Every structure is written in structure tokens, then in C-alpha cells.
Length: 629
Ligand code: COA
Ligand code: AMP
Image (cartoon, rainbow, N blue to C red; front, side, top):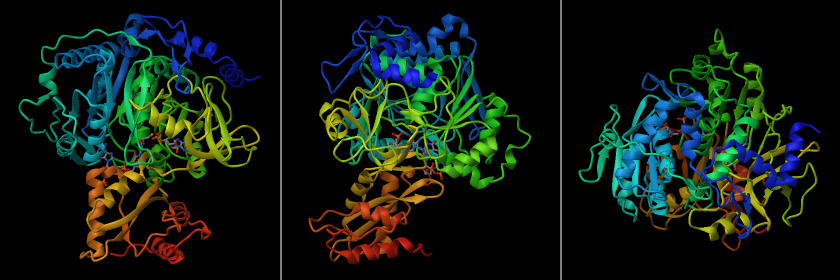
């Protein structure tokens, strides 16, 4: 039996033994004696009664074991022209001081702190400082607008917000203050204080009594030591798009997370202490949490925080420059980034002359990896391209080719095989497993392994309803797919209204809420349509209220602007069409599935239950018509 099969089998037959061993990779204040608490099933807790501090495991322990002078963090920022390094000791010192600053501002164990920042090192420092105090961070992606930020403030109820004054997106400076002010005005929860990192490109105007600058916050702050917390205490909340407009607060615990991430760095990503691991993502997404911040640091590796784009900062050779300059062993990014590079530099001209022999593996995740991109990257780089499939909820790969266990061959179109701990099944509508080759819903048998969400923030009921009730005993991933005869999994896409735009997970429901709030809109639908670069992009369709005295083109432009302002530029809703009617069933349900099928160019049969077949036909025409002008 190969090493992968052996590990997988053990994780299924003896999960407690498997994860007890993996827990040896972490330093505990109170080592785990019990491994799994199943007394509140279907909600499970890993390592009940154990105690630790995640920041200690990410920083202090490495200093004690002789890595104090090793580089922990490299901030490579082509948009500001700065590259800076922190050793483990320097990063620990900065984190301890900012933790002291937070404590002085009243942040204590269990308090929530919202972090709304660009890809600046202070974002990493703020996250680790919260972990040091046992406070709970909730990072909000800088590309989100006021409505999304307000929803997170209201749900997490933070004691304070840490923000940067602006982000730098390619060549443009995006001030964050207008979004922050609008969100604070809109949320019911009152935030006492804001700490603002003043960036010279666009400093914010501080509100007296409420705001203080990062520089003032840390001045004379007393460095804080690590506060021991329970393994089951939350480390962070990360909100993610669901099918409704209200984001879901995914909870990550301290113990299970540390154990699983440390294990995944070694066994899945094959990264050894001292090596350089680069996840070209954003700290606002789960990939950034797991594989920019916590994973590499828990593993004693060097991590890169890259403030730039795959193209345009300055060109499509930027990734190759970073790999060569920092001797990167493994790069992790989204397929869309590779597609963007390929589009600009199809023959890989910008790679020539670069010494990339340090690079062992390219990991791609966040959206479906199309075979064309997989082959192109494989040919160009000459290293294994490892597609891996997972979600904000799980925090680490559900399926991959585990490079540190066994170099299983990869296959185009498949993220390979289930990782240890995940009992992945493909089921039909009755919940029974379907045979290999047949498509169905992808579910995971409970309990989920350590590191996955134990629940949603203060909402067990929603957790059970959203994920655990469709198929009792199993977690519903929301993705559809199939296994092949050899046990390789193929993930074909979401079965719900979540869409994936340039590796960013977005809710069409949230966009629909914004569209329907416009006074001229009677009803609307937003669907994801295939896009060669971004994978998917949203498109909106609206029906105007009878008698609405406004030109369709005006409404369309206003709606695009509203989504950009409320949800954020990242939603990339660039086109809304006014239509006479939306296709509906006789019971009044909008036929989003049929709309999606038509948008993706499938020969969608007209459903038997349709009320207005003309509307479907009209939509077909609209989708075929490029916008003029
Ligand atoms: N703060 C403020 N605005 C942001 C932002 C941020 N952190 N991130 C994105 N935006 C803005 C962009 O500037 C852009 O604005 P525009 O409409 O004015 O041009 C808009 O949101 C859409 O951004 P994006 O989807 O990133 O498109 P793009 O055309 O700027 O770039 C790619 C396309 C493919 C280069 C880019 O999406 C990319 O690098 N993707 C990698 C995805 C990734 O890392 N995913 C994380 C999961 S692994
Ligand atoms: P997020 O929670 O933002 O990480 O998005 C998770 C969703 O992205 C999954 O449910 C999938 O729909 C999609 N996804 C992520 N990785 C992959 C992959 N490797 N292949 C196919 N889809 C993926």
C-alpha cells in the first residue's frame, strides 16, 4: 500500500489516533488527552480540554528552537517599490508590541477585532497580535465595499477595527476610509475605536476620539506575552458568501487549526522548515489566512506577502521575478492568475533567462482548474502542477496530490484524491453513493477533520441547516462532481447560487439584494456566466416597475455603480440588462438554473413547469447580443 493510501486509511479507521499523532507537531500549554468530543454531534470539537497559543506556535517556538534570525516574512510590494524582510524574532517583537497596543485599547481574550487592510505587513502583524491575546480576528477583504463590511461588523460585533488608509491596486490608489465610514454609519453595532495605518499614498482623516494612527497606537506600548487559550476557542472568523445576501461567519478554532495546518504544510505541500513558501493570494481570503500567514509560520518556513498582481505590476513576468529573487520552493495561486499571465505572455518570453530551479511545485486552487491552463503551466514551468480543492469552511485542502506523503500523479481536470480525514462521497438526491463516473453532490462524512469549521459564529442552527441537514451524517460542500474508476475526484462547480469570479467567492443573492433595492426595479436575477479569464463573471437581469419613468440605460448604469459601491469592485458586475420578464415557473420561481445553462451556451431544454417560455427565448437573445457602445 502506498504512503498516501496508508495514511488515508488510518485517518478513516482510527481518526483519533491519526490526529493524536499529528498533534505532536504543536506545542501545547495543556496537551490534548481527549481527541474528539462527539457528545454534541453533529457538532464536533477537536482536542477538548487542551490549551495552547497559536501565535506562540507560529513565532515564539521557532525563536526558542534556533530560528530567531531566519526570515519569517518578506513583504514584496512592486506597487510601492519596497521589499522588506522580518526575521522570526523581529516579527515576534512587532506582534508583541501591537498586541500590547490592542490590550491598551481594551482588547481582551475572546474580543473580536475586524481587520480591513491591504496586503501590508501590518495586516499579518494585526492577525498574529490578536492570536497572541486570544482575541478573535475577522479579516475583511479590501476589495469589499460598505455593505459587506457593515454586515461583518454587525455579526462579529468587534471591539475595534484595524484598517489601512488605502490599498494600491495595480496603478491606482483605493482609499478605504469612505468604505469604512459608510460601513460604520450603516452598522447597528457601535465600534469604540479604529486603528488606522496611515499610508503615504492616501492618508485618512482621523476622527478625533475614535481613531488613532497605527504609529500612535504602538508608541510606548508594552509588549504582550502569549495568552493561553482553549483548543476549542475561536482563533478567527472569516465571512464567506452563501446563497443568501447574509455572509456566513466561518469559525476557526485554535487547536484543530494549528494541528491540521502544520500537518498539511509538510504532508500536502511538502514544505520543510526554512524553505520559502509563497501563496500569491490575499489575506482577506482563506488561502491567505492558511497559507500566507498561519501555515508557513507554523511550519517554520519563510512566507511572502506579495502586494501586486500577476500582470501589470509591472508585467506578466512578475511571478517569475519573485520566485527567482526569493528562491521560492512552492507557489500557490489561483488558476485565474495563471490565465492572466498566459494571456499577456503566451509563449513564456518573460520566463527566459530567469533561474527558477528552486521551484518544486505549483499549487493551484480557489476555482476549477481548466485543463488548458493546467497543461500550459506544466509545460512552461516543468514542475508538477497540483490542483487542490477546498473551501473557506474547511481551511485546508479536501482533495489534492499530497506531495509530502507520496507524489501521486496528477490528472488534468482533477484535484486528485481525498486528503486524510475527509471521507469524501458523491451522492445522488437520495443520499446514496453514486457509481464512479456518475455526477452527484459532493459531501463529506462527519466528523470533518480538525481545522474545518466547528460551526458558524454564534449560529449552530444555521450551520446545521446550511451544511448538515441535506444529507444526515454528512457535510454538504455545495459543489457537484464525480469520482473516476481510480478514485480521482472531478469537481464540476457549485450546485447553489455561489459564483467564483477570478478566484473570489461571491454571492449572487447579495448582488440581487442590491439590485432589488433600486426604486425602479420590480424584480431581478443575477447569474454567473463563463469567462475565459475570470472563470465566471456575474450578469444581472432586471424587470422595471410598471410606470418607472427612467431610461433602461440609466438604470443599468446606476445598478452597476451601486453593486460596485455596496459590495465592492471585486464583484465585477459590469453588465445589467433590463428585460421585459424573467423566466419563471408557474409557481413564480425564477428559473435561475435554466438561465445559467443558456448563459453557458448549453442547449437548455425548456422546463415543463415554465410559465412564460417567451421570456426564456428573449433572454437567449440578450445573452447572445454583445453590448454596443
Ligand atoms: N482592494 C480594492 N480593490 C480591489 C482589491 C482590493 N484588495 N482587489 C481587487 N480590487 C478591485 C480591482 O482593482 C478591480 O477594480 P476595477 O473594476 O476598478 O478594475 C476589481 O476589484 C476587480 O478585481 P479583480 O477581480 O482582481 O480583477 P482585475 O481585472 O483587477 O485582475 C486578475 C484580474 C486575474 C489579475 C486578478 O483577479 C488576480 O490576480 N486574481 C488572483 C485571484 C486570487 O488571488 N484569488 C484568491 C484565492 S486563491
Ligand atoms: P472559497 O470558500 O472562497 O475558497 O471558495 C470555495 C469554492 O471554490 C469551492 O466550493 C469550489 O466551488 C471552488 N473551488 C475551490 N478550489 C477548487 C478547485 N481546485 N477545483 C474546483 N473548484 C474549486
